[in-house]
Every structure is written in C-alpha cells, then in structure tokens.
Length: 464
Figure: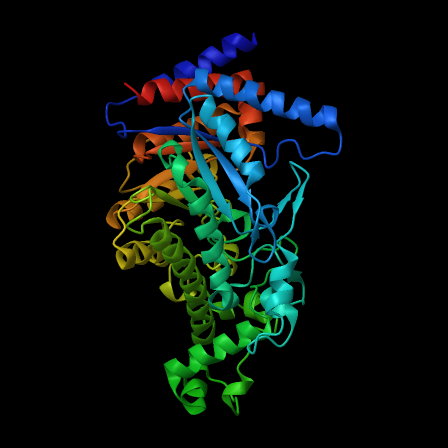
C-alpha cells in the first residue's frame, strides 16, 4: 500500500513538468552538525561508519555536494589559535567519496533541539572585547530584548564593526588551510545571523525586537539625530515631548504593538533603523569574506559564495500584521505594505543588501539560499512567477533583478515524509527557476525511503 501511495505521489509531481528547467541545477544535502564527538569510542566509530555509508547513498542518489557547518568555537577555541584537524578529516572523507564539499562558515552558535546540539560562540571573544571603549557591559556584545532576555546566538550586529577583525582572521585561516582543496569545493556559505540566517534573533515567547543593549540604543539615537538634526524636529515628526536626544529609546510600552504604533512615524523610523542595522552588519561580514576569498593569489577566486535568508518567519496568512518579520529585521513598516494583497512584499531592502555587497566587491557569483522552501512556495491552482504571492517566488524575482543566484532549503526533517511538502518544493524548483536545493539532513534522506525517492525524482527530472 505504501509503495502505491508513493508512486501516486510521484505521478502527481510528474504532471507538473515543463521544459523550463534551471541550468546546472545542484542537488545538495546538509551533513549532521557533528560526527564522532562523543566520549564513547565505539559510538564514534559507528558514527563515522554511518557517515561514510550515507555518503555512498548520496552519491548513488545523484547528490552533488555535502554541506557542513564549520563551528567557530571548535576551530578557534582561543584567540588566533586555529585547529582544523576535524574539518580536514570531514572534508577529505566527503571528497574521497567523489562528492563536492560546501562548507558553511558558521559564526553562529549551534542550538538545535532536533540534534541535541550545544556549541556556543567562543567565550574568549566576549572576554576580549568587554573592555573595548564602546562597551559598557559584556552584554553589549549580545542581543537584548525588551524584557531584558539576553541572546548570544551571534555577536550583536551593533558590535560587528568592533569584532570584524575576528571574522577576517577566521576566513584567512580557512583559506590557508583549504587552498589546495578549492577545486573540490562547490560553494562557500557564510553565516550572517542566528541559525546562519541573515536576521535578528526571534523569541517565540515575546513580541519584541532585539534592540535594548547599550550599543543598540546609542546606534538608534545616532540614526535619529542624523535624520532630524534637532530634538524639536524629532518631536514634530513623532508628536512627542522629548527634551533631549538622550531621551530617545526603543519601544518601551506594549501599546507599540497592541495599538499598532509601529505604523506611526516613530515606528517607521525605528524599523528603518533596525533593518539598516542588519544590512550594515551583513555588508561588513559578506564583503570581508568576498574580498579575502578573491585575492589575486587565492585559488578560491570566483568561487560561488552563498548567504541564507530565512523563510520560516514569513507567514502566508494575509491578515497577520507581520510583526515577526519586522522584529527579525527583514522588512520595514515604512513600506506601508499593510493593505498590499501580496503578503510576500517588503523584502526589497534585505535583497538590496546582498546586491550592494556584490556591487561593492564586483563579485558576480553570490547566491541566496532561501530556507523553508516547502512552506514559502505552497502549490496554487495556477502558478505564475509575476503574480504569485509566495515568498519563494518573490525572493526569486528580486534575486533575478539583482543579478543574484537563487537556491532553496527545507526547514525541518519533519516534512520529508509529506507529499505536500515535496509538491511545494518542486513548485519552486520548477516554476521559480531555483538553481539548487539543499535538503537537511543527509541522515534523514538516507533513512526515509519516501524522501529518497522524491529527491531522486527531482534530481533526475532537473537533468532532462
């Protein structure tokens, strides 16, 4: 019965085939967060054996590359002390199996309930910069919500310029270590925020931005002072009674959300600044990586570079007020999209950030990886790239305009047994011209016959 259902699902997909496939489509999978990192020698041996066995299955499946996270604290456990031995072993096994490697330069921490992963950021970074002249408190290097909750999934974006040397030195060390393996690397992906995504941290238990550290507040005041010049101009625009620039604060009252004050002039200014802070961070880290990888003596010259945009925060429900996207820094309330029939609008700024990084560095091989592609490209009765309200189609359209590549990822292994999820994935791949797909994780593909067959079907049809 299961085989009949599986075949029916595959036949359903086959009815959607057309001849407008993306050229040079790359099929990829994400490896486990860690392999062989237990205290049990036998368990380590078993994990490495399974890793090699799964790689062989991926080769048979038609996978082009294996993507792996390179965790910052595992490599640089102390300042400027790099140990790449684990990743040399990992990459050599992948390459020896005849597969390409797509490393993710992971400047974020690993906090995954699915994989029981707990890899924090290197503690020495916080200690090193806590005495910096711009830092009043070590938590200024972290994100702080309205309730005071501290998040250390990524170094605060308002501290990016302060710690940028650390990102640069890590990339330089990577280049030195893997220069000889460049031909076996398909793409280098850089983490630009929590879970490797270009966004601010989000808290499911709290509707709030992450703008309450001292560095964040100082940055907000500077932004407003630059725009309005005087406190009188600020008061006129905001209809407020502030006495000095120092009185300017991020939202302090819950009415900011309940009374939709985020649509006021103050709210628009706040989210303009918030989104621009994310953009400035992204440009600093991304241009640093691009310039280092593309030096004249580098064997990585012209190698594709990937960035990750979150799709999981977006919701296709039109009556939502999109607060999660605002607080993730992805959109601006000043764009006045509230009555727009397209719930996927508002991403021009974040895609513009990636375009700016590409233009500034004159780099032409920058790819966007959109996550949650199975949720952001729901199948409609009739899909048209110009008319669709799906985020996957909107991001693809913006990427095309910006001369950026577009690839997709699924959000969770939990969807891999769903016909609807695979239907939606194929919808984006086929109709929105996605040039690549990364499914996580390799273990889940190898152990799920339905997912294996679906992915195999997509790979084979993308080659036609």
